[in-house]
Length: 143
Image (cartoon, rainbow, N blue to C red):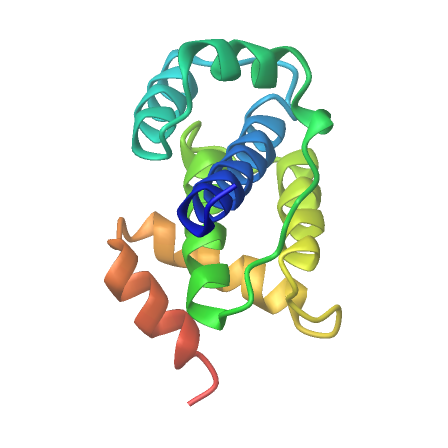
């Protein structure tokens, strides 16, 4: 196996893991809305998830473990995607917040501030910020 094959394989695995985490958030309320489905379709294309992988992940999203990224910026990008999925319904119920907190912890955010991080993430999405603004605001939230 060449180095590029190894990189591609690890990249695909990370993408599947990230996508399955977002699917878990999407189905946490027991329903997959039209908006959530559209978001998943776009995200699957962006993450290079094949149609077969997409269906497999929808059937059993727990099959793939959450692989936290090493870089803080990448964690924020994943939190942004997860938060957008939660917000797609424009309703943040207790179950969705609970799931988002669990994923934020799995992404490597500390238990001491995870509540603040999730609350800040959701408040930014209420303002319809883009990824760059989200990352900047989350990075500078304590200043």
